[in-house]
Amino acid sequence: MKTYYVVRDGFNAANQSATGRTANPKNLFESEYSQLVGMVQAESAQAAIDAVGATCYNGQGMWATSAPQRHKGLTRAIMDSISFK
Image 1 (cartoon, rainbow, N blue to C red):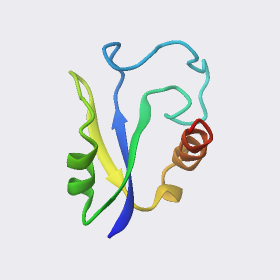
Image 2 (cartoon, rainbow, N blue to C red; image 1 turned 90 degrees about the vertical axis):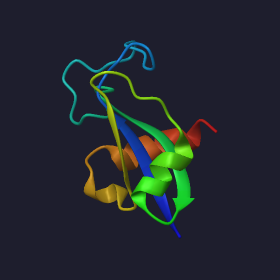
Image 3 (cartoon, one colour; image 1 turned 45 degrees about the vertical axis):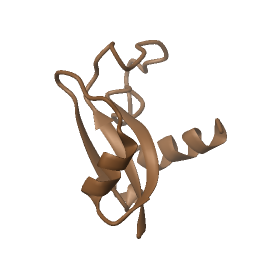
Image 4 (tube, one colour; image 1 turned 180 degrees about the horizontal axis):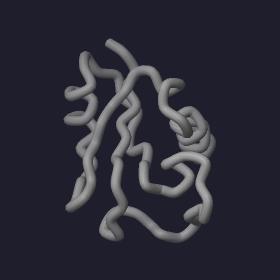
């Protein structure tokens, strides 16, 4: 099993806040277009997405990765998420 980081892409006011958005973001995580919704141990990316159970609305999708360093801004989003717990 690997640690997977599940990300929701796309903005929808039903499950995201527009406050705190960066006007000129360096990456999609700063603009809140992408949002880390979970970190889970799973056998595959699809199993990780299923385990998190986050919601997606119109214009949104989810993906999971076990290599966060390959996606700009994801490592910082993970660090921020851990510091709030």
